[in-house]
Image (cartoon, rainbow, N blue to C red; front, side, top):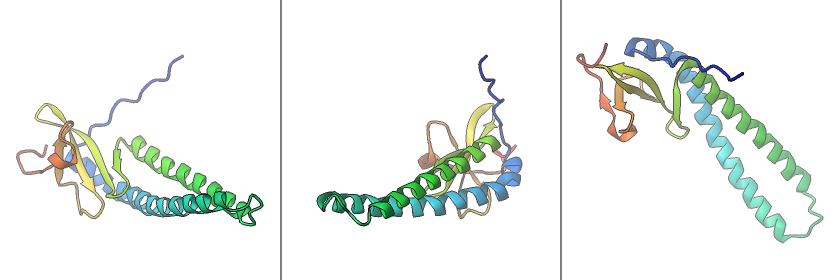
Length: 144
């Protein structure tokens, strides 16, 4: 039996803003953890390069392995956060900016309501193909 896909959630500006406190908390956690993970990955890769040049009986190999395992757990945690957003119907776009899109319908066209961490409310939108660069401020005529 095939898995049934849940119907796609379409947000209004009001429903997106109502979901925003939870979305904001999840996105904040993603951005914070992602920055930490990237930093530790860089250090781990640097350690691996320097230890591969060193002798095989490296006294720090256990520590490096422990760091690698902790990173794997944190990457899984990040994936869980992104899945949590998806379950809410929100599409996660960027772990550095903390960017998300809320699928919506505007004047009969499917668009995205766009929000990034640090913004007080959902105040922008863009078409599917325009992306973040093409986002436009919502006005009274576009909010339904």
